[in-house]
Length: 124
Image (cartoon, rainbow, N blue to C red; front, side):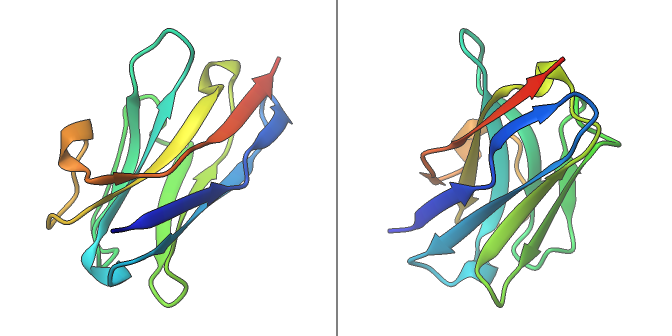
């Protein structure tokens, strides 16, 4: 069983930045691909970013390309989401996910474990 705990959410003005963290436990972290999704009220859960176990492959959702970056520190069992130039449309609960598969996935079904999420609110 894998446990994922997100942190770093909060309230920020449009144009600002936040860095989310997700601490993982319960499985060799470097074997797990990791991802970030977000879900706003009344909307589908949306893929934001993914990274392979080694960190050498990443993928970003179209709506965040050029603004968000995903990275990981396997020594700290932590994955990060750096969010820059935030917009009100980025407001959502951000969830961390872990996969036992190799590579980088962008679909919900590709991921096996989920955190509880952290709220990000961007004011205009």
